[in-house]
Length: 533
Figure 1: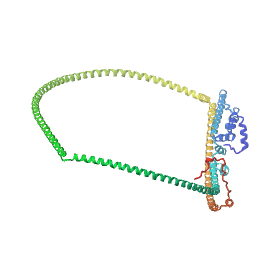
Figure 2: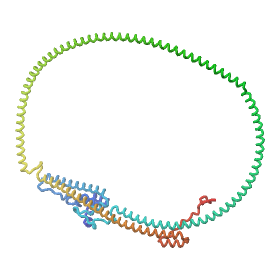
Figure 3: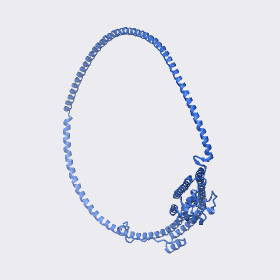
Figure 4: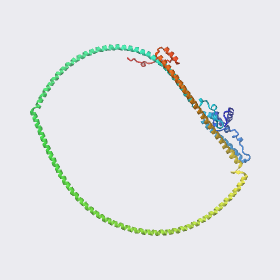
């Protein structure tokens, strides 16, 4: 396989191939580097795609001088067309390969040389940071360092903002406390005046309630006198009515009336019971009579059915006997007919066998005679055909000997046959086999480079992961140290009201003092904080 490490030869070949419009289009579209990488990926050499090379050019295609002149032009034209079709097929394969090649594939195929060679990490592999996937790994590592640094800055900024916010909150709290105390004093004064007015109003309401209570007591006394008089009047009427209702004469009259009522009810109930008993007795007598009559009717009906059943049984026995006698007679008659029929069938079968045997013997003799005639005829024809075939074989042997003297093969002379078989199709197969071997070697070499790059990337990632763990440990150590110093400084800041000393402490920690955002002066009146009282 040609080597792409010699730039002068490659530039010369590129300039030479640029004269071909088809190759120039591919180089302009994809670039010369990708074009040569695709050529290697397909197992081709520069002369395989160069139409002006002596292997493909029409001026350099020759045939054996002993080939007949009538066939020489056809063989030359056929060979020229075959090499051009092969070159066009290879260019189509190269174009399709370029469509699917990535930059990494181009780099790997660019380094492929003849055969399959071992990988030199110093010369054949690119730097680790340029391998596929390492950009994301480096970006992730840088993002982690930036995140840790941003977290430290955020903590420091938050410390300063917390101090400023606490200071601002203390100032706002002092102002709110003063305003609250003033509001409380005003509120207490207003509440005292309100309590004083409320006491005066309560005194007036108390005097009014005293007057209303006196008037209500006087109205209550008058109502009680009227109610007591009405009750005494009702008590007197009730006593008079009670004396009349519970006197001995009234009670005796009521008891006598109740006794007469109970006696009449008893007499009426006895009459009803006697009538019911009489009705039940009459019904019992009627039912006994009806049951007796029914029993007599059933006995008479059973006797009639028994006599009728006996008569039917006797009649059935007579009918069965008659039908059995008739069936026996019919069976005997049918059996006699069957015996006659069987005897007649046996006689007919014997006669039929005799006739069939005679007919079969005549037919067999006839066809045996015809078969013998046909066999004799076919034997005569086969003898004539064999004689003709032997004659043709003899004539073919004579022609073969004559053609052997003329050195002809497949109706062609041996030189034309050799040119077509070995110098055209044989050369085509040889070129294809070499191309396939170089293609397999290039593919295997590219896979070896890919595996080597992956292994180098894994080793680099392992080393970076170890460095990253050490960096994380160092960062954690520095973060803990910084956090302790920051906590100590924050305690000092919390106990230090002087802002200048707080700024000095923040600068000593390595951070700038942040500033609170300025308050917007355009806040509407409704959005301002309202007082609690």
